[in-house]
Image 1 (tube, one colour):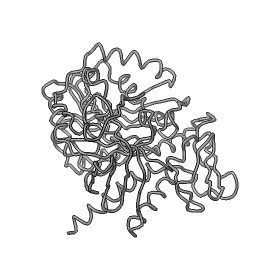
Image 2 (cartoon, helix red, strand yellow):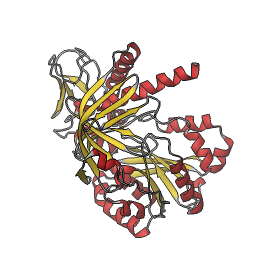
Image 3 (cartoon, helix red, strand yellow):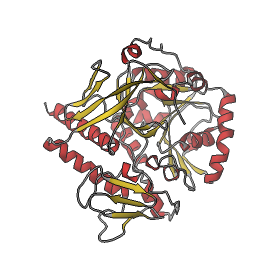
Image 4 (tube, one colour):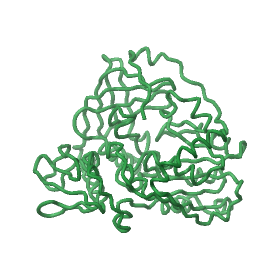
Length: 424
């Protein structure tokens, strides 16, 4: 899937009028039907199945908040198969509206900027649930999972549940990540997909429980590990490209501690510095081709990298400093490519400069609990997104892999700064 892009001078882009807020529309049944029918071939290939839990507690016509884990492009098709013909709006990233705003609104999508506090979004969700009597589907992780485990959830989602006051249903998929992991360059594998659809809380239970209890219930529901599921269920993934791009998430060698000099190709991960090589087996384990295996489970390796990033932040040695190509989003017409610049990230947050000195944007470490990053974003390249409610900057780094590390650093830095603020 591609996105409209247009080259334009930075000052001209910033002078463009911003779109006015529009109330979300109730999805058109005809378009919902098109999506449902269009999803059938893909889901048939995955032999998709799902199980319901406690769903008998809900009135079939009762609007509800649907919270779904975010694994791949398969997610929207899965939701259509489960809930059709029920009408539901979808909370979607604002960039998905570029070039197709009219269509996104007609299928009931509500635009938002990821990892930014958005009171307008909450009002739009209330409008759909209470005035339009339409359910709302939301991906609380916001970003795709990189390593097949839960992407960090925002705190106090329980507050949102209390405010909305409608039943909460979770959809947790197994297999959707393995079928199309983000690091693998949009290459589809032959994997069965299933889902558990659970009434996590009824409206009455939301009234009775505390915010902390609601958050804890959601954390438990989202406690998944896709690689562990593959291993324990003997799911075979024998595609010869299954390790392509694995360097994107396993960017640090646990043997020589070199970073940004790894390669995922075919069925192997290799450190170019020390020559250490691992095979990603058909059942989802990492196995050294020679010598000891430091990590046989990708999420364990990923967590180890996070700990190294945390140590760098604590001792003051963490720093990202990269040349980037910059795309800007200010409306729904295009991503405006404004030229090159430099992106720096350290303990003080982000600084993006460029466009012959016209661009100088800074972002605080406390601006959000995570950051919007992606691989092969709309087939352009790996991306780090900064910005606010007025403008978004899509930065495409040059050089080695840094996207996963940057997200880790943002999340760990946010927690560190938050703890310090509380102590003060």
